[in-house]
Image (tube, rainbow, N blue to C red):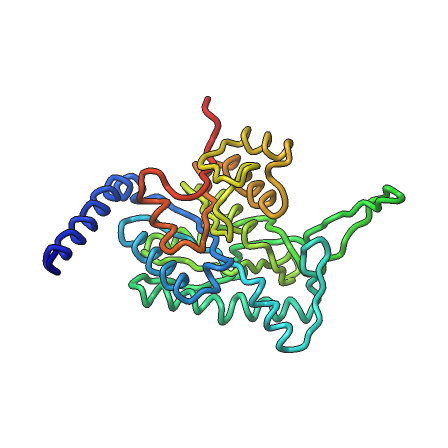
Length: 303
């Protein structure tokens, strides 16, 4: 087979892909997607470029993407580099004054700007900000309790400057949409007395999606999506399905808080939430613009 014939076949293949994508481009034009970006997708250089180009393309076809990024490993690496000790309680980083200063420096500084530059290099127009900008994320101290197994007494865990959103003020995001700018948000919030709080990026993404009435909340993870007990991907779930799977022990570990965030978003007006494997190249396009998608979609129960 000649090179010219192969070239035509490849072009026909691409044309078919574009033809399949076109109805979804029309369907989602003008809608807002809040995308939580983190994990391996953010740490791998090639995947980071793929992500940036996907975001630029989504904006080009009329979708309004809002990015919320994490950065736990990068914060940990900087703390190690500066020889600042950090500890964890039940998987949550204890954030003292020195740690919150480093967290803000990493999240709102180099990490945020690297994502912005990658999107701009891919043809988008992105601007980086944190929850402090425009009072986007008002926060309060996160409280957690732990029950002593012997005495059965609950004690309050002090995690320092770890917060949770108390109020989202989306006006600044709405103004960005009007001028076709892609916001890239670091999950740093401001407290009632001006304190700086580090907030879980999944939580921030869910609250922003709810506050702006986003069509979709998309969470990039380091797993395929939600798996059943045979470790097979579950393509679609409803809130009632999720509760059943939690009760029978199918959903465990780190997937529980992610799904709780998805359910929170759905309860507050978001149409659908998606949990995707960020290790797959162009996973955002595969989920958004193909018939069957590629991850787990959580949608409202049928009435």
